[in-house]
Image 1 (cartoon, rainbow, N blue to C red):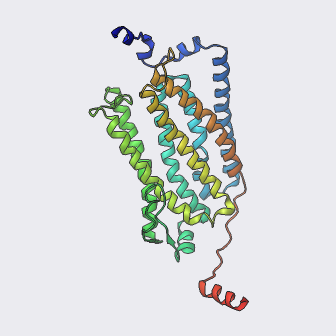
Image 2: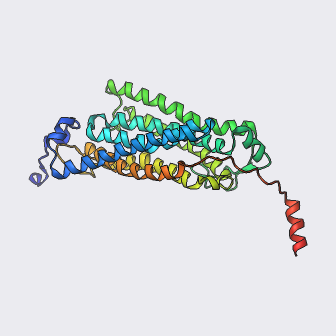
Image 3: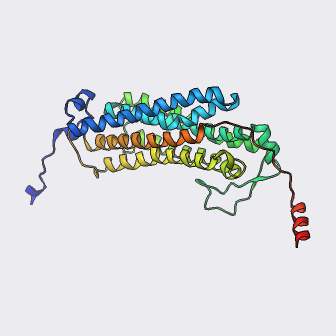
Length: 323
């Protein structure tokens, strides 16, 4: 019975990810075509982003230039980092960290972009001061519809900004800490023991992510009607899609690889192969999102019309007269 359990394992399945030169030397015809096409997609995505930056710099008002460039750069930057991780597997952890830091800043910038599309903080407080914010939204409180609505004040606006800004700041801090710990052998994504740093840092960063997404969702639910002419709903959908693909999809594939669900394919170990599959998928997905994002953001930015001052009494009088 014991002889049936003796399974020979390729030594490369337990080694570190291969070097870039090892990948190049072992590429077959299909691998050459695949790597060439994906690299071409990553390069085109970055060229599209550079062209879009030039357009935004020339055509967009000064108060919106920076935030729009940050937001539109999410897909091209993640695609480029994924391409580097595909060619240099041993750098995958670092390329993923750079992509994560960039997107953490994008979360905050998207909230600022919605405010700037409305005219800035003062315009937002002027137009929305008589309304309230629905805080029972995802990803934190979508299951709590009984929560009271919050008044729109300078304090509540500051808290919304702080909720997203903390992620941009702390994500970078924890990334630097992870890199420092990895040089000491303390931080390893494959080490899920209680003594490993990854089992403590990654869940905490996940909590920070959920907290940061909540203010963006609150503000979007309040402004989606006012900004509908600026295509804010498809923009928000693309922002959410980048989040799901770059964070959730990558995490799921990496977990499957660490659990042994993804088989070894020399010279790639199961974990390295999982990372490789994740990088290749991201390049294709970010290329498509880059094309869609260009259609959404490459336009003339005219100011929004003033909000019509119609109160409930006027509506009721009009309805009673028409009846």
